[in-house]
Image (cartoon, rainbow, N blue to C red; front, side):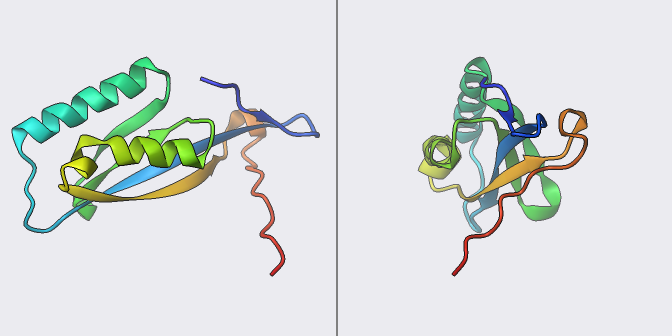
Length: 115
């Protein structure tokens, strides 16, 4: 796992990527798909990329929190998830700038580019 990003003012920024899994109506999960998904998560954990994961019953899907080098890597991981590959779930990916003790609970959100 790479260290949190260091900012010029000395604060450390922890950047994570969120994968929101969304169930596809009419495609109930099979035990085999769940087993493959669990193996995928175990591999991510072994590689130091998995932070947290689990179902979110209120939204018919789940959430995976990753610590990866960049957004492209997080999307590639989501594309390889057996639930996505098997067309059981779709996903959305978001960048999460975590506020925590290391950055004094002040995440450094980059400014939006001028249009």
